[in-house]
Amino acid sequence: MRRSVNQDRFLIRDFGGGYALCAVFDGMGGANGGEEASSAALHAFDGCITGDVLNAMHDGEPITRSYAEKLLCRAAEKANAEIFRQGAAPELEGMGTTVIAAFILPDEVIALNIGDSRLYGESMGALRQISKDNSYVQYLIDIGRITKEEAVNHPQKNIITKCLGTEETVEPDTYRIGEVPEKLLLCSDGLTNALTEEYISEVISDDSHGAEDKVKTLVDAANEAGGPDNITVILVEID
Image 1: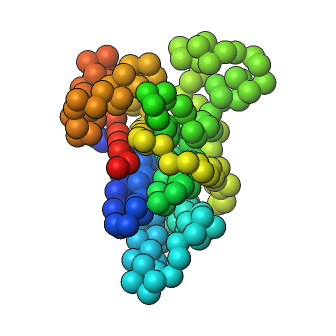
Image 2: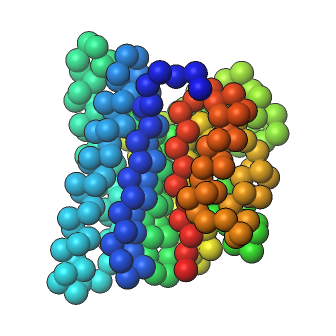
Image 3: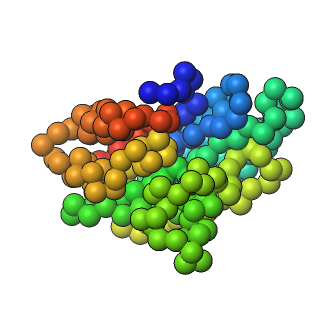
C-alpha cells in the first residue's frame, strides 16, 4: 500500500513425482536496484536448478538430499556473484536481496535462507518457523537482550545481517526437514511484519478454503493492516 514498485520476486517449479522448488526473493536498494537484484536471483536459482533436476529425472538419476542442497547452494553462489557484479554500477550500488528457498523431495525438504524472508511448516494445526532470520533483532534475541515479543516493534527490526549481493561472498543457512509438513509457507517480511503468526496459522489451517484463497486472504489482511511493504506468499499443501 505504500510502495510504487514491487521489488519482490517468487519462483515455483513443480517437477512432478513429489519434487518441487519454491523460492521468495525480497529485493532492496535505491531506485530500481532491489527489483534488479531480486530478478537476478530468481534467474540464477531457476537456471542453476531447474535444468539439472529435469535432466536427472529424465535419466532416472536419484535426487538426493545432498544433491538438492548442492544445487541450492550453487544457485545462491551464482546469484550473489551476479548481483555483486551488477552492484558495481553507481546507480545500483548497495543493491541486494533476501532469499528463502525450499527444495521439496517426496520424504523431506531441504531449505536455504539468506536474510529475513521466512519458511514456516504446519502440521496438525501447529505452525512453526523453520528458517531463522539473519537480522539484528534476531541477534538480540539470541544473546538474550530482547524477547521475541519485544522484537515485533523494535525500531531496528528491518536491519538484516546477511543478504545476497552486498558482499563478494555469502554463507547461506541450510535446513533439513526430515518429515515433510502438511503445509509449507514461504513469505517476504511484508507478511510477517503485518500479521501475527497466530493469525497466519488460523488462515492456512482452515481446510474449508483452497490454497489460492488462503494466500489471497493473507495478502489482503496484510494490506488492511497498513501494507507497509511488498507482500509475497507461497503456500504449498502436501497431498
